Length: 177
Image (tube, one colour):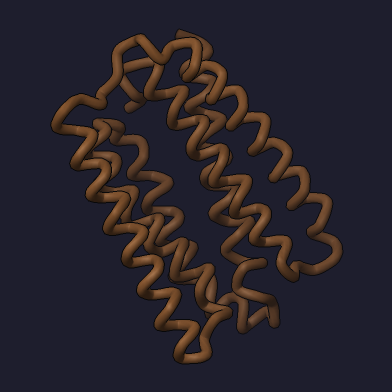
């Protein structure tokens, strides 16, 4: 269930920790005041996990990895499609005057893109955060409307927490090998 190579586990911790920080940051766009300390804590923990993963990745850069001449381009295509879909959808939502739904759209694209990433990187456990982020993204807009919150205040902490837990788990995995 975990990456075969320590370097890949460290990389997953670094990347997911970084993006967890970004989601906790986006959530700070307009949350209830009582959430501010929790969101800041999530951001700080995410930075620490990302830094730990990054340092471990750097130390093990020459070790084995799943990335090879075939994996790298496939991964690049998946990420390229993700960025294009996210940008196109965000532009369309902004044009249609539904900018508040952009964070949910971005999260949806992130969640969906993690399914093929899990396959290409041979890390089946990534299907779990993929599914959780996708479901959270689908629920975010109606939940935000029902609670009179900004969509970013709903999806940000959810995506941030999912990514942070995954990153921390991956960092612990890498550190205990």
